Image (cartoon, rainbow, N blue to C red; front, side, top):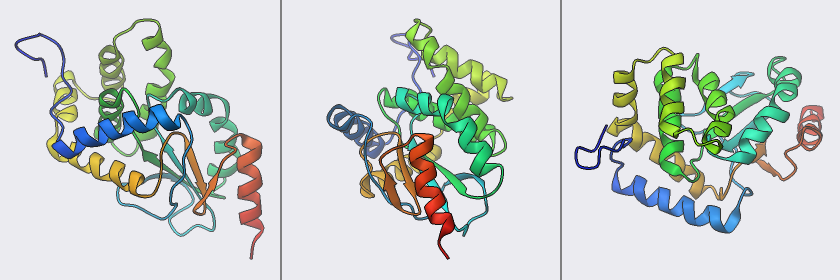
Length: 216
C-alpha cells in the first residue's frame, strides 16, 4: 500500500519477528556473502519439481530473488540441470525461500510467486531473478514486481493484497527462520541428500548427485 504521508509504496507491515529476521539476514549477508550450509530434510512450504517426495536423491536450493549469484546460477546452470535431472525425474529439486537484502523486495517477490499459484510459482521466481538487470538500470523494483505479478494473472489490487497478507508474511518468516536454524547463512546454498555442496557449478552438483544415484 502507499503511505499517505510520504506517498511511497510499502509492501506491508511485517511482524516483529519478520523485521528481526530481515535485519539478521542483512547482517549475515555482510559477513557471509553467498555461502552457507543447512539441512536437506523436508520442510513445510517446500516448492518442488521433478521426482516425488521420498525420491532417492533430493537437491535443495536456498535462494533469494534479490541475490545476484542466484540469478547467475539460474541463467547459467539451471537449464542443463533441469534437463538432466529434473525433467527426467532423477532428482527431487526443492526451492527454499531465503530473502537477502533488500529483504523487503525479496519477501514481496516470494509472496507474489505463491499468490500466483503452484503451477506458476517457478515461472515467477525465475522472471524476478532475470529482472535484476532492470533494477541495476534504475527501474524501480516495485514496477518489476507489478509487471511480473500481472503477467502471472494477478490484478494490481490482488498484488497489493498479496504483499500485505499478514498470514502469508508470518508463514514466510517461519520458513526463513527454519533456514537460519538449519545453519544457512547465505545464498545460493545447495544440499544433496542433506549434504552441503560447496561447488554449485554443473560439474560440482553432478558429481554429488551422480554419486548419490549410484548408491544402492
